[in-house]
Length: 521
Image 1 (cartoon, rainbow, N blue to C red):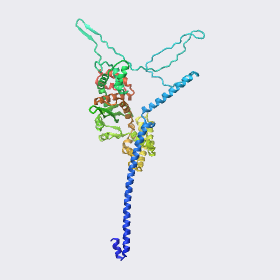
Image 2: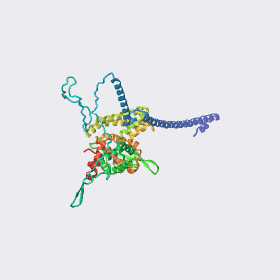
Image 3: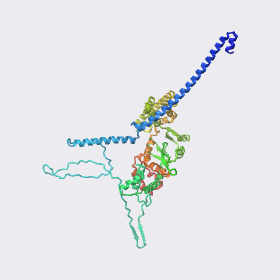
Image 4: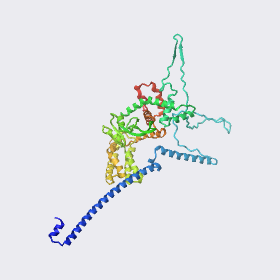
């Protein structure tokens, strides 16, 4: 029963009834207006939150690019860039010291000071220069001088690329009775009837793939030394050497996949697209052995025309073990095939670093501090055995990881969805089980930095040779880069190894191919 009916039962004055109904209708209207205003306020708050998140994201991105361009902080520059600035500073300091020495030498004799330099390597050849006095008699009394010792100082010198010629002389002998001619066989060579000796071939390959010089610059260098080697000839040599070294690269990949822990990453490489007169994007997929296990370092590059995860699955076919990767979706299918994921703590740290560098975020700073403790534990156990490292991680790293995980969950609950902080936290929480997995063992890596360090020279080379000319050239470059990078990682001098390998390769049996690989004996 409504209010009007009840008032009629009490014979209320019609004016009173009309007034009561007006008040009730007004209250209902006010309630509806209030609900509408509240709904409008919620929409405004949502729009404001979306705008704030977008502003935060844009501010973070802008600060990141500004830092890359203008900042002098450690993570703003590569190691090579920071070294370049250090070189300039040291050059300026040496120049100022030399100028001061010139100004003061006329008035004050300068006393020699100890240099503190390291001794020159003992294995380098020595050329002795003996400097005897003009006279072996004393300038004061005229009597004979007696040798009491020697003052020896050493200077380091270098010869630039020195071209020389090997003359192969094969005497021919004839038998008058049999009317036959006998001569020594032509020595086998990696490139038949080529004018290039193994040393020259190795030098060209090292210049191109390790020192990142395009062939036209190598052509210019040889011309300066009076030897004209056409660029087409250099290109032919490189192509034939790539084919000769391909079996070694394939064998290196086989040995790599015998390991149970691998690093993986990929980097884009421009590939010439002749039909369109421009380049398209290809990729070098990089794989590295585990640095924490007692085994030689192996680095293998696999050139592919795309970034599909199918390329990684094809390379790692039938392989099982722990794989350290970033959060790229192309690797996800591998983990459904029985491969165990390891997540990179350095990538998680980078999210908080970018946030802290943009606006000094205190929560990001706290995350960086917690991560720094984990890396400090790793640094303290650098020389440990696998068993000692496992014990150290169990007693020190695992408690820190558990505390950090709880802190991340609590902080995320208080963070606005869509904010830069929430995204940084979500990146870590989403992969937490893969991030902390390393701490349950003594042989699993904490991050993917080893493979990123192996890829860095490729980025330097891309700026010089600009693009791969074809898919075949890309595969050839990947094979050669794999061998040279592996040699460097094992402390083997690449030029000496390659020269020796090219000398042995023509007659070396395939059953003993492992002897030619750039691995420690």
